[in-house]
Image (cartoon, rainbow, N blue to C red; front, side, top):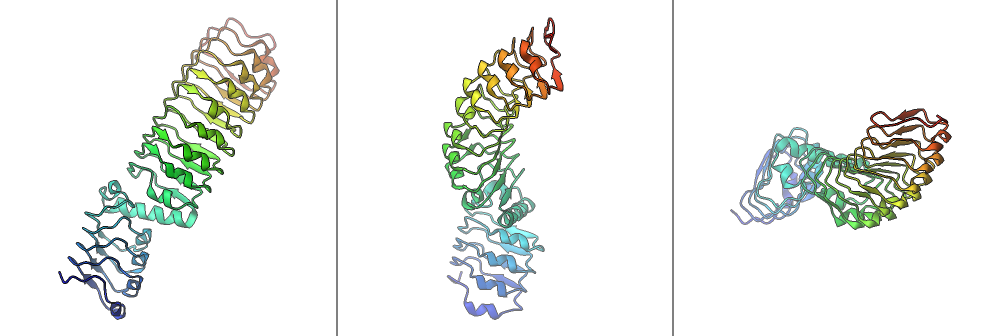
Length: 348
């Protein structure tokens, strides 16, 4: 160790320098002028005090090895992915948050793929970090508040944190096939959110504040653990597509009548024994699936659902369809197998 705290600026004139080893010193940062050293092939800065790494590191076209082990780095600039010839990256013993430790531990290839996807998200305002083994909502999604689309499906994320509310520009948020158990109430601040895609998780409820998502059109909660279709979900009056099949639903709030713009509703594969009379107020419905429940009857108010083109009530315990079902003149697909129907209404 020579107790070097910074690289002398005069080094930027060393255009033929190929190897730079400054291990076991006290360097805290690498200045942007390092981009001038375009001949560099091997950089080793292990066991220093690096807290940040300049994005200029991505402008070294010949770099093949980068050793940053045992520093204080919280993040690696995504621009590093622009160094297409790099074959070795050592990030051991750093308190990294971006990429997170679980990504770094998965190896060089996964780490570089993560940085590449992150870099693309900066250019497109769309963050796609699918199947990366993430255990927490990515810090990048918390920092870049201009993001419009976030897809972090097929990971191990258990909660949507308070920081989710920092994204007023977000239009779609997708976290399918994670381990989600909770969503922070600050999701209400996503005032432009049109699509919330949360299937195949472990959610039992959403915060009451989701009723403030006045632009939400698509809500997918398939394969979760909901027991009731709550009032606050029914208060999202902008919904056009609601999917909550394959849960444990036992009841539907009478406030379902507020979903006057809903055109598609999937409640199949639940534990429903009845539906509220207010169901008939959803007069925009065109596609309704109630298959594989324990329904014994449908409300007579179904006669008001005159725009229905598909009604699936198969595999229930329905003995008779409502008498006004014949008012649904556009009904093209009526699926009722697996029910003890005595007879069909005459108007059909």
